[in-house]
Length: 109
Length: 113
Image (cartoon, rainbow over all chains, first blue to last red; front, top):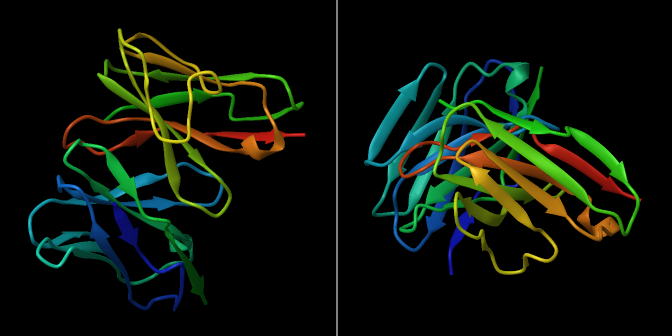
């Protein structure tokens, strides 16, 4: 079967750095996505990785290792507004998104 | 990018009734997706809606319960039929093809009483 694993919840301090991990086992691979979802809102796109390596976009970076079935989302200089759920999703061989359960990130002052 | 207008944003419905959710996209898209997100959980795909053909439903979801229309390349509806409290959830439509990212509507928060 297809499976996406990520931690249920993480806590970090404002101004610090946090890394949210995601491991996956899917039927084929056509890219990995990270989304941010604030409570009561729809998910919004953060990043897309299809090749191994690090993609940096401002305070957010995303890393992919296809051989290990592993990705992480790195958030730097954390702000209170970063408190949200972060969803990892993999696009399988049928171009269908397989979603992780999400990681709830709590930022403390 | 794509902008998706989804409505209603929320509704409270009586059990046994039906609710139709609409999604309008500002550009033509081949595939539209309907998701359900129950409280504290991730997204579950209900069905994929292609224009001009019947929707493809995922395991656990059937057309009689969740009929979908896709009359053109910019519009789709999802109906939640004969509702029960277990159908209380957030329903989301999204678009995205191939390697493009998924764009989501604002979501419909449904409460069945």
